[in-house]
Length: 396
Ligand code: CAA
Image 1: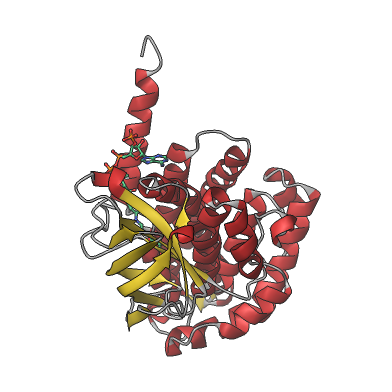
Image 2: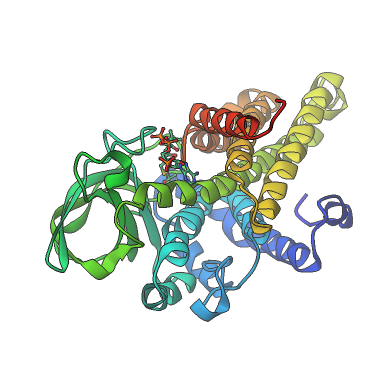
């Protein structure tokens, strides 16, 4: 299944533009990106060749307006792009997602006109990649536990601290990050900043060795007596935590999209293998035991897709989509893990071997339940939002 069928377009109510993008990216990703995915996973080499091709297709600024060099497309188009790239290679998918919805979006959403004009064109063209520096050793699920400090003196800030597990950290040209500007003020003392590669004292530390997503760049970011001009502050002081929470709301739609990509790739591989593999004198797809697993997988993948696509549409309609983004991520990531697991099961012993891509899908799927907030954090967000909504509805 590598082409967008008329039924897909109809069922998911895609516009002509979205259907065209989906078809084009499916063909591109399957022809150009998928064949390299296994090798990149093995070597852990950053996918620069894919990045180059994706720049040519103008994939780095999909949801940003043309005046800043973007394509001006909607969130669903962006989600479709992440899904199709991740279906071919999750390491490349996460690179694009972290660049777009985490590293670039906050500049677009919270930046001044001067900041947008300065940074967005090179990010939208993909000439520079972007990163998002939130996580620290003591600020994981507790994102407000930031210890990195930015101390203002005159018209500049002195920044010291460390971020960990940062996607695109060593390959980025620009990063946004949080730091405490008012000590003792809790999350209201946290601000966000833009920093460029090459700023003295700003460097990438240890590159992580990972279970999956091995070709994506995950490093520490170090700030050692970095001097940043006050003009690099994003928005106003004390807004950093909320800005980054809002950024994660959007990012969680992309994790949902990546999850569908991995789940679909698992289904594609399982279906192909089940039709080819013969046991007891016939293709294993003819056995009900296998058919039940395939039926379960397709139902799960399509349900997750509906939730992710609808959340993307809801975001663009201006709704408060915090709960829906958390639900889309929670559901789609669980389904990605389940489908990758079932795909290995259908492959039997062969699925456990590195010769088949399903063991990579299994390793890549696991991050979807962790990155941009664990499944348990999504449940917490969902429950809090639901209770808040209930409190505002008399009679509930
Ligand atoms: N939008 C707007 N405002 C928000 C918000 C949102 N989504 N979420 C919280 N806020 C606001 C609240 O309204 C509140 O404001 P007031 O005080 O004015 O009422 C304030 O922020 C504090 O909110 P909480 O009390 O809910 O804050 P908390 O400390 O309890 O934390 C949390 C909430 C949901 C647990 C949050 O810390 C969280 O999301 N943690 C997970 C962090 C995470 O996802 N990290 C991923 C790192 S990035 C990554 O993984 C990328 C990668 O490379 C793959």
